[in-house]
Amino acid sequence: MYGVSKAFALAITSLSAAVILVVVFAWQGPGLNNVTPSASAALFDEQLVQGIYEQASPAVVDINVDRKLEDSFNRLGFGSGFLVDSKGHIVTNNHVIQGADRIRISFMDGSSAEAETLGTNPANDLALLKVSAEAVKNIKPLTLGDSGDAKPGQLAIAIGSPFGLGGSITVGVISGVDRTLNSDLSRPISGVLQTDALINPGNSGGPLLDRQGKVVGINTAIQVSLNDFNPRNLGRGSIGFAVPANTLVNLLPRLKENQVIRPPWLGITAASLEPLLVEALDLTVDHGVYVTQVMSGSPANKAGLVAAGLADRGRPPKGGDVIVAVDGTPVRSVAGLIAMLNLHLPGDEVTLGLVRDGENLEVALNLGEWPADRELQPRSRNFPQPRPEEFTQPKNPLVPSTPGFEFPDLFPKKRSR
Image (cartoon, rainbow, N blue to C red; front, side, top):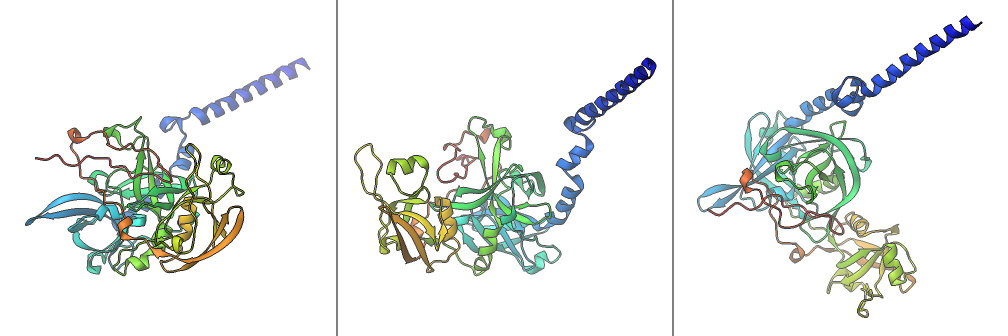
């Protein structure tokens, strides 16, 4: 009996040792950075990514922007773009082509063509260019996906021309959704996708793709921390942002009509309600947008919206309307209000749900068109290739601002000669 028990014990011991070896191999087995081939494949499917690149990269273009000085052209900057149909329409960022006197497109096959600007939408940093259909006859355009289906953790692939290096690809994930970014208007871009796929100057205007190779976003900006800022390693410690593809889908028909698209205008400044603000204002509602200013002559002014009044020194202003809904749909933030208004065109009628002095009201008004004089002065969004000695610390801190993020100006202006 003892012999049987001893043999059984030895068998169990051997089996346990084998199991331990298997477990250790699973955690410490061969592969990059101690990741097994199977785990590595789960994190990064090389064949999938290479297939997407081979299919999509011919439709991704380099954009070179020139400015005319006297009788010659000087290079202003560069960026990326992508073909959206067989007629020669190319999407990019507005900041890429801003201030251009000439736009030259370079394709993956080495051919090139001059482009004209059809439509721009500074509010969402989008622009539509046009080359001849003949120039793209052998290129399959990219398909626009549904950015509303994007979820944190899903595969994200960026293709573009960082630092002018055309046809570059980086891979990551969607890190967040429904972010906001400031535009060249004093209003945020809503629904922005956040990604850790490496994006650098020159990627602007290029596509952010999903695992089907569909465009879910237009790469637009990066955010870097000043604490970790190293001009020689811009990509490290940075966060990328992409304008959602659904915004482009909604605007594309109007962009093709050769116009500057200005967003609908309500004519207020406001703040999203947060618990401390609700407490300080002694409000009867815990969500919505608190109206702090109403512009003279604006749709909000004509409809009688009430802004916060002056208060005693050191105390918050009181008496402003709280917008809690648009056409019956609840509103919980400034970005949410803008997203709701963006579903409409200037001239459309909307009904605002308000709370005024504890009373629920509904006010109907017609949205205006964003006034041209409320646009900020254009800032350079093009990134000329700098020499290492030309790097300097950015003048403005690249930190989050309310209600969104500033586009970082990563490179200084060229030195005067």
